[in-house]
Length: 479
Image: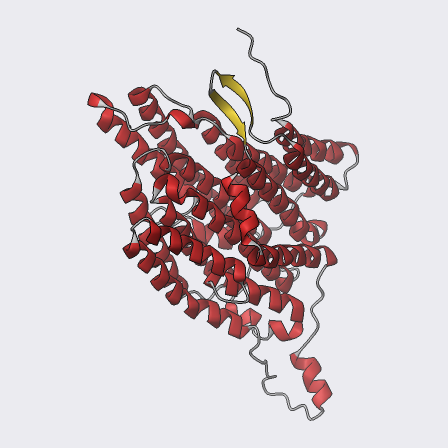
């Protein structure tokens, strides 16, 4: 039987995979312009996602399709492509300085983008798991990829990430196999909890799937890999891990929990994740570790509406979109403020940074405010209100209370980090009588590459725009 392939539905995938091939060809043939090729390919992927027909499907067996390109998939594809272009921009100064092989870095990152597109459009468990691994596999290498050995934690971080991810993939694959044995279904639209003597087998498969995908979003107690991996990776790679990689895990979890009865398991994971993430973040003195634990807590906020099943998927995706934008702004500002350093440094390294680089300091404060759910970070405020509202409407008021309580706890470390940006630096043991000389000594200008500035500004503007017009995001997710 010949199966027709709808190439229009596959346009975003062709563009994403073509980007990785283009980077490889440019690397082999020219030896430069790899970043330009990667960014151009990411833009082409965005264009194809917008141009592809809505609700297009392919690889179908009757009404069951393995590839479903919906408006929601289009939005997620645009996000993956935009994050890839942004991380390439953030990495450009360090790559040009010879920190890591430029061609290999760009090829691996664009290959990961291809996996993200597959996850966004997956219509069955096999496609979903393969896409998730395509998204994750290149990141094992990117975490430890460097020419200089001046940051030994990178190798340990790469190995930790690899081992944990392999275990999570094995657990998720076992869960998918058990579900298939119990129900005979692989397509997401056909997933059920099983009946009769296979009911318990299907429940075990569903639980294993949730556990396997929970590794990807760093949900407690499956979170231990995230802080050392983020801190050991170059800051732009940590940005991609905290945004695109986590977004892939959220998509996979949402695909399962909205069709299987996993509410109690997800609710427990959500409470543990947001509480542990916030409490441990209070004690951090390194910027990337603080953002990593904050990211763990944010994963708990995303998991909370997923405990409702299909009724909470829209709220979870909306929160994930807002979180991704704000998290990228935070990591982008950290990258710019750290200059040539490839690690995030300690919180004390940012003392007075907002005075030395006004716009970058403002962008970082905007990100902190949004992640905390405070104005002027309206994107984060609307996201938290959306989650709490969805939980209350579904009768899960206790879980909404836990979300609100954790949001209050998180204020402490977000405010502390933001305040340090404007804490004045005084020269120690140096007497400077001239006020102008004192100002120059305490407010040295930071040289920030233009490409990094553009990436941070674009992300900050996007966060502000969606904060003022959140209904646009909701409409696309609902479509």
